[in-house]
Image (tube, rainbow, N blue to C red; front, side, top):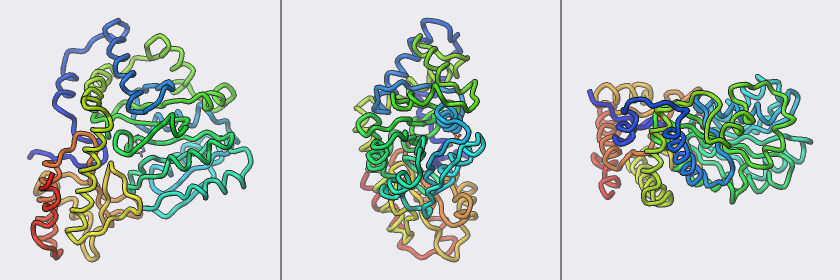
Length: 373
Ligand SMILES: *Cc1c(COP(=O)(O)O)cnc(C)c1O
């Protein structure tokens, strides 16, 4: 059966990107590869909206999250971690693993952190090295107010680290204008690639911490990455095929400018949220992301069965809830190359399954808004 992937990573890969990655492999220590890497890297700066160096790791997104800890922290350091979902929690797991004290800013799942709560915590705790947060907390489909929190953090010695793995190119992020010190990203979400690449952009302020940071690191070392990047290279064999794909996917994202790409994405996000409500379902997030939408499973329905039936009967892949949200929500991605026609197909299938499960709604109501696109 065909498969319609509407999961918040991996996301569907455009045919041109697949085609580019299907070409015979080339060697990386060549002018040919360096040119490809340079073009991809230059365009990546436009998507990150930064002049800072961007390092490209061969790893899933978590590799870059780990890099953003080990390169600026030492055992015994204090950091603040916003925890409102599984991915926020991962930053505190990584920190603790390296002996870094992760001071949690715990928020109710589905809500976004209050910038003044970050300010209060920064004032109360002395000598905080960094604040870790997400742009989009994918577990709850919630966009955090990076701009406001960046303003708070900028007034202190702490650096701000933002996990934009799912949010990049979907939720607004102005790295330099807002003063975000480290932006972490990954390949398999809004960048429309297979998993396997991750990225860190690093500001001057963050660089100030690198020299004295004593957490162990070898593969993920910023200094090694910087030395190689200045020569248009990476220290170790890059994921050549994925970088070739990245060059292609960034061409697509920037074809009409990033703003247009993101505006189309927002239109689809808005229509998806409306479609969820029109089906008599509730949105889970109080501050919804434009990368992914989370809907509450109606009382009395089996959320895990819903996801399974969508896959089995229609080949439509939504993601379920994680941890405490298992069976309680389902998540639909609208980032990257996902089109209105994909969403219509997804919602036609959703209506079919909801009807079979006994949920009451007006047939076609979920599709009404999406048909306007
Ligand atoms: C997907 C995701 C990750 C995890 O990345 P991996 O590629 O699975 O290592 C981290 N943070 C956020 C916000 C994500 O959406």
